[in-house]
Image (cartoon, rainbow, N blue to C red; front, side, top):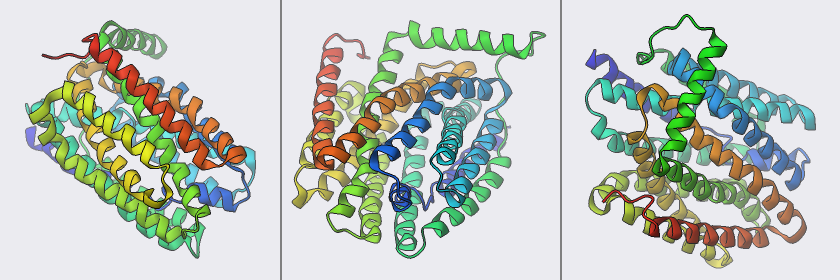
Length: 395
């Protein structure tokens, strides 16, 4: 049995690599602009994505906990392929919105279920203490795949936007085959004679109690969301900003790939830094370095330096934070609780992303980046206040 679940870890590494050679990741925003959509309209598309995530995160997490994590991941891949097909064949505003709904479903069906499958596989192998190392390795593989996707996607997009989407569909079909070879972890709850609707409701109540009764877990989820949203926003709008500064799609792909390369290095360092400095110091200092990077992004002459460093710091923060959250979460509700993290992230993104796009349309993206820097400063002050009250202390 242990060998079967060990195979899960290796297959998850392979799935992470293949799935994240996403040739559209660095150019989808440029592609939509090429089709004639404004930054505000693009912001609406991203908002639709996050509204879908907001409404479907917890339901899809419950599907993963009740019907199976592997099953949920397969549905997620199929949903994302539908999104890619719509992006290829449509330039209609409403149809693109439908595409982003499927994109959001693809994200939520994978969100939580993937991490839950890996963490519970480690539990069954009695190696859950190695999770931060496994997740660090996964982050490195994710960034390598992402870096390849950004470089190759940027190169291909110079002459053929559609081809990037077509090749990404091929990679997702390979990812689908990899997931199908994984072994499902057993569900902790015993079969019930209750209806599926009743089972879903009970599971939702149970998972919600896990999150809101554990103040430390709740704060970790909130902090993860408010830190990740500004970084995600700057990552996507950064593409358009560089394009307006005169950079080609290929050059932008190189810079985004460097961001991923440093993020991969952050994944390697996360395990070592967590062992040396522990939770409290990491929560103090890594967000501080992120804050400094956001302000340095405002300097055009060195803009790519802080952007690349953001990848490094964000990767460390993500890997370590996810380990802390998993340690506080029961196996039977793991996918659903992890989906609450995605839910919190979507709430913040729905508020932040379209506003940044709207400000970019009217006042320029540099002004938008200034607003993001101010937001991150406020977030860091909030984090310091939380830490000062010992809500997150483990010592």
